[in-house]
Image (cartoon, rainbow over all chains, first blue to last red):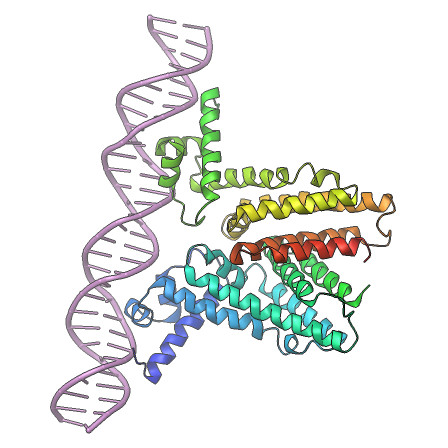
Length: 194
Length: 194
DNA sequence: CAATTTTTGGACTCGCGAGTCCAGAAGCTG
DNA sequence: CAGCTTCTGGACTCGCGAGTCCAAAAATTG
């Protein structure tokens, strides 16, 4: 399938429109007709650009969202080389998810892990990338002598990822960000050797 | 609606059968006909015992599952009064979720938070109960002088809940329990003032 | 045992949503 | 401009699943 410029634009519009729509409202109950209406397209186009139907479209959206999750944490996440940077990153994460409220794209992805095979891979790669950035940040701090060399950077990064995921999940279902903040702060304190 | 002994048994069979079926396989794709087949009942019975239909049935299952989550951690969770008890509890949690593999009843509940109003309450109460037990355990340790009195028990309990939730979520989607273990261990180390 | 209520089975309706199909419009290429 | 490909719209099929309905079987009560 070769796409002209126009075709590529339409495809993009479908993905971004779906993503935006997914961001507010029940992810499970979204229908192809909703998407058609919102993106100003037709059934024909949907299947033209995503022959695999709903599953293929959702996977494309998942990849799009996964990139977003990382991007929204930049430039902080990419340069965790001072305690100030860690603080700014922490604030950015909390702010992002507080604004986003009940909906989390990553959670939607994860819900689909069970049903669609490709989703597991997307989620796995995202988590790996995310955790890798954090680990790199910890190592950088160790090289500066700000963090104890004996601390296991991989394990701390894993704990941070778990804390963020869980904190966001609680935020989603209760509306309160206290858990997310507590988890992140506690891991950071651990790094500082408090 | 007054239930005879037989009626009560049937109702129970429906809830437990649904719960068991939910524990393996795609939670979103479960149909009333599946449930009917598995529990050896008929459409008539389903709507007889759950006039509100699928939503009411799922909410009943949710409550059933929520109790299970806590029960599966007993007796450890109820008596976190020594470091040995904390360790046993930690092992019990990890073992439980490792066995459970990709499926987590709580996660299914949370996914429904967005769609059904009652689900949010069930999840909220479960988290509150769970976190309360942990907090009580921390306070008990403080009273014994095993944990620094200046430590904020509520905040540490919140971080633990977040870590567990996130760890389980990662376990569900990647199959590895390292994150869950790292998160729990890190919080416990924090309690011990390492 | 007769009257009443609860329990059970299963056929039926009905709407909805994924996916198909095709014809016509628009866009590229020589 | 002629021939080809890609793009677009929308009507249509088709199966599935939630929920309805009712009549018959058990159980309960007096």
